[in-house]
Length: 253
Image (cartoon, one colour):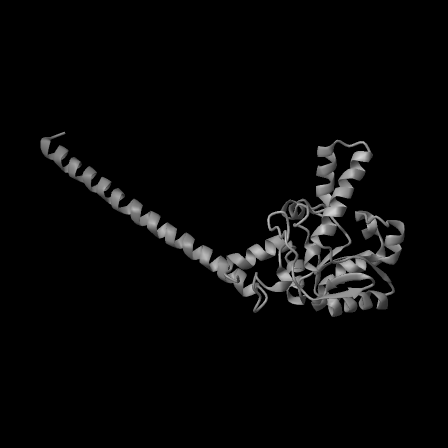
């Protein structure tokens, strides 16, 4: 190879390296812009599908769990239904829900509704004591209790928006409330039609939902969230945790 050829080759190599140096940052910048555009598009599509006018801070979407603890009592106007107290704002939706069930041929029993923090503390401690009496260690009894009963301050029964509702025949067989109550046609009807009245089955029967809520499947626990929210959550199989998160990420705070 002649000296001239070497010189030309060197210039070509320098040119290639320079082009690469210029191209890579430009490519990364362009790629970043594309990814950002895709993310914005995804958020926009998700936002378009969400119910109109809904905000994560709406009263009916109040989130209470082990990560969102309310040690103080939540203020709202209470009414009494079948000796149980609940938020006045869900009195009519609950009445309509139960009337629909009765019209379908199923009578219902309102097992539980609003619970004060003090009462939640009482049943939480009683559950642990009962499991210990059955032979479990304190840690085992606590773990088992926490799988079905929220720790004081983290139970959404404090909101007055949650009800333990079941077909009367299901309650007759399982007075202590068991997941198997969903074997009854009455409970199946309640679960299926809850969204029509603004309620959702709060603790669903799948691993993803259990991981999000921290509570095992409860076929009797319904939470009022409003009709539009309930239908959207049911259609997309969302827990309240996931739904509130989706609203927040979409800027609907």
